[in-house]
Length: 152
Image (cartoon, rainbow, N blue to C red; front, side):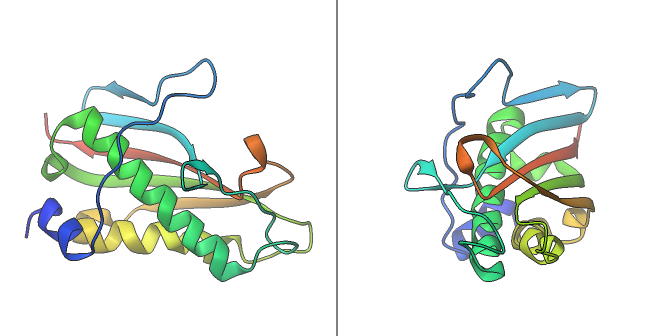
């Protein structure tokens, strides 16, 4: 099944690439690797503000991370032109805006990892890091970046 068929089956429409909020590009390619800049969680086009362990639950954070994965796939589509050219999702790095007591960063990040796995199948299995941080730009609850290997 093509990646686009899977997205359609899941009811997902890829968004256009967001305009960077500072001095960087949304993605950079070197050889067959594409590095996607960190994407922050958004709801209805605005920052999805919250702090895990305070104003947000793990399930809400997981939903935010899933939304970030959709935005990342939209940027990846713009970077490579065809998501069926993805050979491997190499790595995700997730930053979770959280209290010092919050310990479920890995479960929040599963929102992105599980969707990537659903969409890309075996080539969606990736290495990952999940960190708790004191703050993310604009108060967003989650930020995720991604490294992808594509066909030449």
